[in-house]
Image 1: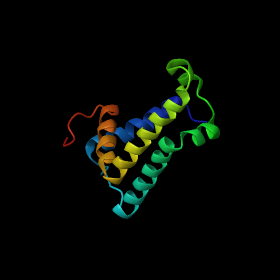
Image 2: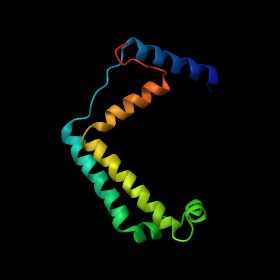
Image 3: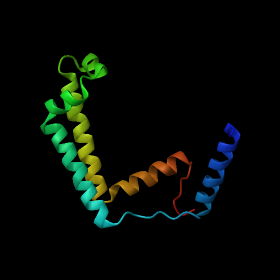
Image 4: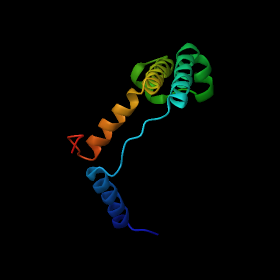
Length: 115
């Protein structure tokens, strides 16, 4: 088994290569990206439209019932469906790549994308 130090070394070598610009960001093909985004949008729409079905599949969420009161699980699944719909929109329009690049820049402490 590897120790934690070997994993830290592997991660740091990847980060060094990223900072030197060895890795280029590739975008997904529109022939895959658009149908995938549309499918995710449909899933999110049906999570909002058919909340009772989702509730019977996955059950009540104790956190939502406690924080939002009675019926909080339905509200939680509707919010989750709206979030899934927006993620589908972001995937279909390729906005998700910019969001993920910015997130990766935050996690690797990279401030200037051109450096």
